Length: 387
Ligand SMILES: [Fe+2]
Image (cartoon, rainbow, N blue to C red):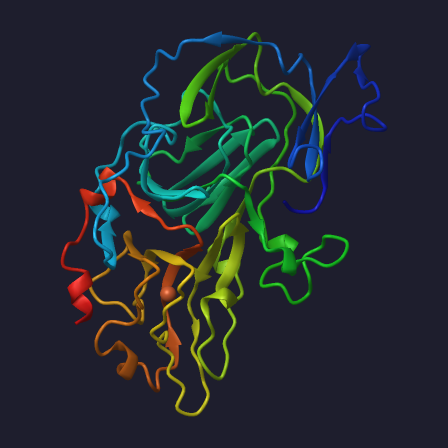
């Protein structure tokens, strides 16, 4: 959640009548953590809770519940998501979960077309990293335009759809966070503003451009809840919002707006922490000068972070510590065994001045399990590549 924003027409006070041309507007309170957390109040032309339940007949066949793979030996793993076939329909259809636990579902999305309906994820917040492509996230709160290199945040329960840039290849990392995701608590001051020493500021975020009620002719909203898709039909356009006020809204954040920290010696991954989810930390590894102290070893030290599984999605550049991984590669280094650089990388990094690596990493507290889709693109030689 970011700072409070107001757009369009809102009532003088929450829970009092808003009339436009003598017509009463209908409040919808989108609240988090029950009624204790951040919230946004929307004003609709029509009652927002009058939907007809409908059968979904248009093939929303996304693997909504990850298909679990059989238990396997403990190994360092490498999944080549670049080998996954793309183009399976619109963004929701095209989600391919690769690794998951009780807190997060991590996968890739290679959509080919716009969402034909609106979508609302009742299972968690969605945070995408757009490795390739771009488009517009259209929502009841307005449009967020995004492109390659952006994180795109969609709060749980927000009615939205993706309109993709025509002709562009689309290749996104998808992070579904059951307990929510957003800026780290310690990045905020007492009034909720991002602190002066946070690694980004409010102006680094692209927030929704609200243009008032619109009608795209779409009446169906697909809701994901409990891993299953459920269809509802509105009588009018779901984008009938005349105004809103609050802190719950979608945004995009260009990964290169993250201001990396550099030290005399190598800093632990927590310094690259960008967003926090329940049970997981999302880190951004962006181009930067490297550790500059005498005899510093810029390559990450071998480590056994015994409480965490490590997930890395490699975007571009020469990832200092790893060989044999390329853009789209996913590595999974599970707790229980130490991990670290490939042979030669540790020694070879001494004296280097900068890195052009770009990667998104998650440390998760609960162990990650692979899906059957992940096993289909596994690089079986990875574990032994550290010998
Ligand atoms: Fe690690």
